[in-house]
Amino acid sequence: MMPTATRRLLFLMLASLSVASIFAASAIGSVTLDWNQWLMAITHVDSDHGELVWRLRLPRAAAAWTVGALLSLSGCLMQVLLRNPLADPYILGVSGGASFAALLGMTIGVSAGLVPALAWAGALVSILIVFSLARGEGPWSGTRLLLTGVVTASGWAALISLLLTLGPDSSLRGMLFWLIGDLSYARLPYWAIVILVFVFLACFAMARSLNVLAMGETTARLLGEPTRKLLWLVYLLASILTATAVSIAGNIGFVGLIVPHLMRLLVGSDHRVLLPAAAMFGGLFLVLSDTLARTVLAPRQLPVGVVTALLGVPLFLMLLNRARVKQ
Amino acid sequence: MSVLTCSKVDVQIAGIRVAHDLDLEIEPGQFWGLLGPNGIGKTTLLKCLAGLEHPAAGEVLLESRDLNALPRKLLARHIGMLQQHTVYVFDSSVIQTVLTGRHPHLAYWEREGAKDLEKAREALKAVGLEGFSARSVTGLSGGEARRLAFAALLVQEPEIMLLDEPTNHLDLRHQVEIMGMIHRRTHRETCSAFAALHDINLAARYCSHVLMLFGDGDWCAGRTGDMLNETSLERLYHCPVERIESANGPRFHPSAV
Image (cartoon, rainbow over all chains, first blue to last red; front, top):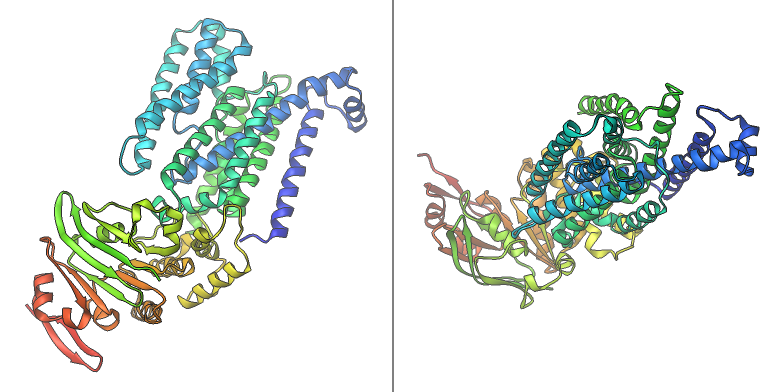
């Protein structure tokens, strides 16, 4: 049990760091602004720098924060759903369906503005496929859901490979960036924020139920939870979060795995603390990763997925090793 | 003060009927011991009593209402169950895990209050885990995890405690302490308990009633003193049994083969 004061301090810290990181991201880049220039830019929207900050950098940073929060929240839910601390938002094939639809759109050359909608549609198809196949009578079976999801994900991966093989060379680069996860063209869609807020509130409202669910389905039922309904709700909410994130920025890896894991180590497994902490830290982590992706090889821009993976893999192995030593 | 009733219940495992037409009333103040060899359906019967599974036939009633017609949250305030295995996947502190026992008593938005915390601390003390509050559950030994799960059950304050081999993994002292605790709780007639056991002598010492499942559908139930004897135990376990008189009544041991 985290004391209320500590909890508030933690939330306040993460919130201020989030805001600070978004502002910092708006000052740093191919043209780095000093404090005075940045203040001028922020206050004068019509100046050159103002345009850069308001039209390009701030929306991109805000999109990064939103996507990071969506993925981290989804990761937390997936881990409870599958009762596995190593589950991530992409494990059940939602991102596969989204990617396939988006890449199909790129192959046949739909306008870039339509790609997010296509991605969402693809994710929805995948969610429905897995949902209807894994449902069935009898008690809830996490194993069946896991297998159905993983196999569906493999199916999408095969279709994606097919598209990459058959697709025109000119669109390959864009496709690749999308598959790795990229925020270059991300403009903050307000509907994503609306989804984030609503799903977060829904999850936060059932945070104590999630705590109980994390102890196992039978335990949760014995403690008064109608687990079947709850589990499908968690699946749907997690899928919506993933679909939203992927439709904005493609398959950014590792955020949804690392952030919940890191936060569990830091704040424990009480979802009333974990969910807000993971959402804010996930946002912060992705803003920083994206800033790094824009600047580390400037003027070239890397897809942010490369940075999160390059940061994520060693971090994850370190954590895993630490956990082993502790035992 | 609730009575849990089995009415003409059939228990099946893999299509084989292991208990037939089971009629049973678990009343406040009673501590039932459920005896039977491995794989005979003890856990399945406990799950039926907890409303986790439907019996193959017949019905289980709480205060003459069918368990399956009652909402889970309401059930959880009346019936609690200690499961046979306790596995903690996620790192969590001991105190937070005990507090999950309060879940059915809290409203949707409610947080655990000072009273809940007090109950949790008392329960930890009762099972000898005081000082463990901040410890991680994944680092506990088998016996400690077992006692933690029992503490969570105490905090849940059910009127009917179902226990699946409560003394599993426990050392001698803690076996006796936990059985004694259940015995005292039921003795004050505030609640009842129903425990699957493998130790005949713990049943002989602490249980007021015994239910034996023979595996062919036959069963017998009644006061412990009337139920436990060489004949019934030999029939139950297919093993010769020797009776030894102690100051607290008869005790049973397998005789040398």
